[in-house]
Length: 384
Image 1 (spheres, rainbow, N blue to C red):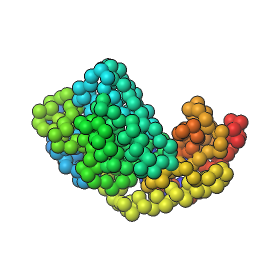
Image 2 (image 1 turned 180 degrees about the vertical axis):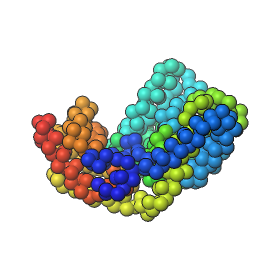
Image 3 (image 1 turned 30 degrees about the vertical axis):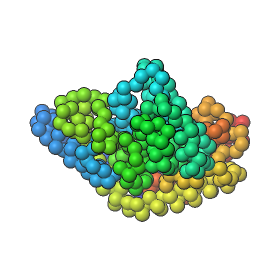
């Protein structure tokens, strides 16, 4: 890895880190900024929390909204996409027979949340299905085909978590409403901020929730839930600012450590200092180069993959039969991690893949190490 940027991100230099998209990592300078806010709060906790904090949290939210190109009055702080999704689900008046639609490649924690809320109301979770390499038209048609007049909510991934595909959210939202008028459309944009320069309001969704701590380099636990005007939801935690306006109602979920939210502007500044969207394009080129190198080493081809991949994330097919179950994917992850390489084996459509990322600290040599470690790991597992 790039030694200077590995140090700047505070990462273990003896590990090859190729899965930035999983949890993100804030650069050391951004973590230092959060620590400074934490220290400031502890010097006079009463005044800081009672007098200073509300304005500081609101200002950080406004900065986050500006980065996203969104109205700060329609943006609420949440810790992650799962929390934002739960707020939307908690505001639905579900009834027996209602349906909640999720993508086949949707995030597992979101699926758990939908299933729990559906079970409470006697509703059910439905799922669209399309292959990893589906184009925009096929993906849109799959969502439309899965909708019925009973569909109350459709969750659409902007970037699918396991397969790193960019989905045509605007087209899907329109198709959902054609088949299920009145359905709420929620965009799971966990991987989008810092990777995609979207006009959020133009996507045509009711709600959008995205993590800043993955690709915008902010402290972990910083995310934004955007809702279109007239589509208010209730925060998951009801506290003092509940009646102070939509965005402010999310600003203060009670007493906790707000340092991460307050350091979000520092993370966004770091993203810009690295080169902003030009840097994202460079990461895209590195990801594509790394994808090709790993596939060549594994003897697999790149056909049947997402036609529009996430800028800094890619799928690499594993050899046929190498991973055919979730347990085998977990075993391969363990074998790679034991070899001090962090990447994400995934299973999609019965086929095994590696999901790899390109972060500022990665270099072409990292993908060569991944390929060698994968071949060695598969051999040790009897699947080489």
